[in-house]
Image 1 (tube, helix red, strand yellow):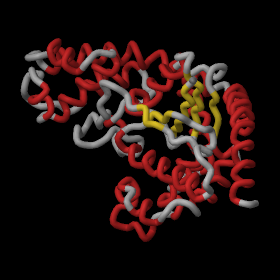
Image 2 (cartoon, rainbow, N blue to C red):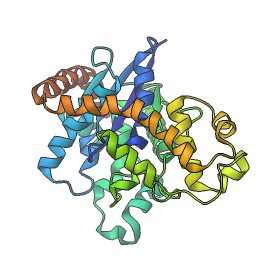
Image 3 (cartoon, one colour):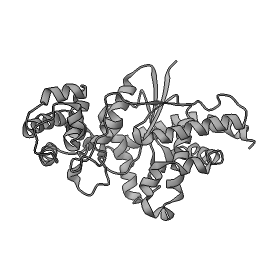
Image 4 (cartoon, rainbow, N blue to C red):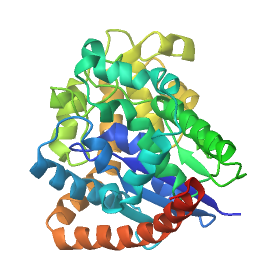
Length: 333
């Protein structure tokens, strides 16, 4: 049986190294495995849970598609589309919101983190975001969903919603219960300026992240200025775990080199940071610059990117419309 894989990326600005290592690199590997049917969605409906400039959002949708293609995702093998072009996502989200329970959503830690102390002013969309995510996944009978640590709870909610719908309407296995796909040997990529914070598009300083559109000189400068500590490179996992900036840089190297963390620690044990940073810079340039060049080239081909989205949305619509029709029959519409 083929795995049916669904995942999405928000079009909220320049994608960065954390997005690449945490998601897109894995998407490329899944795309290349013949036993997988993959759907990669630009989740623009999710993006508007916080205020967006319409013109920027439109450009960011194309930028996300360009990043997918430049990284190696093949639109002939996988479906690439943007969520807002398939109306079944919004419709299924409403129906599933009538199945989901307030208590389940109240436990979602990501809403608490994003809304902060002023949650009364947060949008309802930000609160109900996980129900839309469940609709995204369940419409395509997805069997597996690549997730990071920050999305595990949302996938559990998706599973709960699917099971409750099946039970409420006494229709076994109508919604498939998706399994998580968790990357092995992967650590979350943190800010280059603060090893305790996740690398983020919203961080004020551009020096905190490697963007997928960065030039060679920008990468050299950012790694040179990346925060470290005065000690030599660590010799053990235990020592590494006590030094967040060192851990982040070694994790970046390990992910790019496709080697275990223990191998990287052994390779660089006792060396000074300047020597390590030169090697890290070289591998970043080797892996990221070809992607960066291709992204910039694709961004000049707007018609081509729009064609990819149009073809992808037609394929996605063909699948999702059949599922939503069955949902209508089940609920009594």
